[in-house]
Length: 211
Image 1 (tube, rainbow, N blue to C red):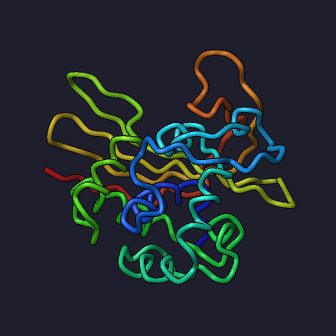
Image 2 (cartoon, helix red, strand yellow; image 1 turned 90 degrees about the vertical axis):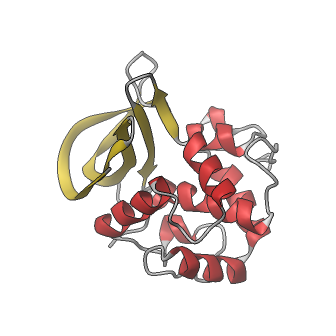
Image 3 (cartoon, rainbow, N blue to C red; image 1 turned 90 degrees about the horizontal axis):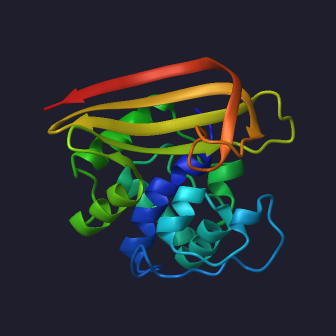
C-alpha cells in the first residue's frame, strides 16, 4: 500500500461536493497566493481546471474546508484505502497516513464507473465528467495521474488510475510505474504537461470488465 497522491483528487472531488465545501465543479477556489512548483498552479481556479492541471493548492484549500472529522466519515463511507486522514488535513493523501493498494484503487474506480459508491448520483456524475480525458463516438477515456513528491526522488512513484470504455463496456485498470518526470512543452505529453522518462512497470494490479 502507498499514499494515493493526486489520484485522491477523484475521491476528494466527491467529498467536496457531498460536504458542500464546494458548490459545484465550476466554483472558483483560491490557491492562496504562495509560490508553487509550477506556474500553472499559481492562480484561482475551479475543480474542473484544477483536476486537469493536478493543482495541489486548490485541493488543499478544499481539504481545509472539509476538515479531518468529515474526511474520516467519508473515507469510511467510500471505503477508500486504510481510511486514515490523520491530523494534517491538507497533506494526508500526499505524505500519509492515508494509503491504498492498487487493487483497492481499481475497485474504487469500478464502483465510481458503475455509480455504486455510497455518494449521490450528482457527485459521482460530476466527478466522472471532470476526469474524462477523451470522448468520441466509439470510446470514452477517464483517468487521473498521481505523482508522489518525495525527499528521495529515485524512484518517484506514479499512479495512473482510469477507465476506458467502448459504448456500454469498460475496462478498469490501475498502473504504477517507477521513473522520473521531466517538463515536456511539446505535443504528446499528458494533460499536466509532463513526460514520463524511462518508465518501467512497478505493479499492474487489477483489471475488471463490466457489461
